[in-house]
Amino acid sequence: MKRLVAGAAALAAAGLGMARWAASRGRVPGAAKDPLESSRWLGITINRPPDEVAPGGHLPEPLGRMDAEVRMNRAPGDRGTELYARPRAQRPGTLARLRGGEDPRTEIRTALRETKSLLETGDVLRSDEEMETTRPTLPGKVLDMALGRAAEGGRL
Image (tube, helix red, strand yellow):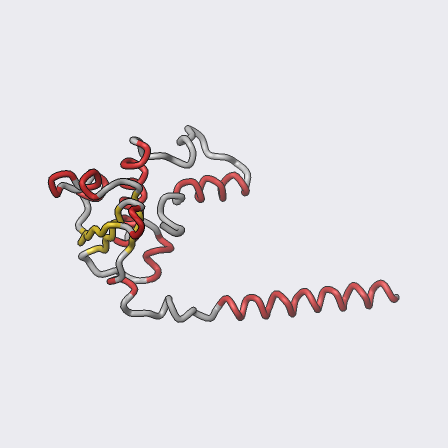
């Protein structure tokens, strides 16, 4: 009988903890509510001088094909070049990020990553080779999804 009561108490505590966690996830942080988010600059620092980043004023291919505003600055302390970009088009909404591929900021972020990789290493580095088959297990499907979107998110 004591085990039954202890088990029920543990289950109730776990349920309460999950309910509080789920309620806290429903709150939108202040940064996500910011209406100026779509007009903010995305930036990276490239370990190359400005004349190597954009020789003759021509941007590297990943950024050159984008419909974006781009600006360059010399990085502090002679540490290369700061490259900033933002999309000219307005962001269609927060749900577009979840659907993937519809957010212009995602495309700009990917182009910045590819530009940095191309200029610093001479090649666009990928997280993993494309596999011909998908992984049949649930963790494998999650891994496939994460690898497919690896270049889109995260800090630059």
